[in-house]
Length: 193
Image (cartoon, rainbow, N blue to C red; front, side):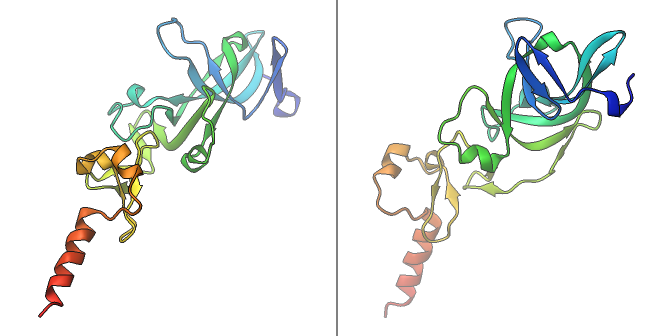
């Protein structure tokens, strides 16, 4: 292996330059599966060949526990799993955003993903272990599911959890959740002689 000072900081493949720290898609072994996603951690010579060390992102269905209702379609977990791979397995660059960055995207492309958890594969542990929950269903936020904010308590609610549709909510000029509506009605009744 080369000393760190002599190692290249990038690699060029078919005219595209990839740097240490870039996030890339890699070809899956068969065409039935989605491309893999990884962060480039190093470039070096191994067994007289140039190879790229990557740190893998896992999709929820690839981790212990599987995909849950709150996992977004484009959600990934940054794992502690690292491998050396052949440079020609790299397809293209992609972007793995924080959840907050992902939410602020005006257009989500096929190259955009988000990550809010890291995943320790040996311990099957997620960090953070807990995330805020919302709605009457008490689920973590999923950017693929529409939510509306109650103007009274500022809680976020899925319309379908209240047996409402997105279309019904979108035409409302004000939204107050059922709990706040009940609270307001009971307070009004107490104040009436």
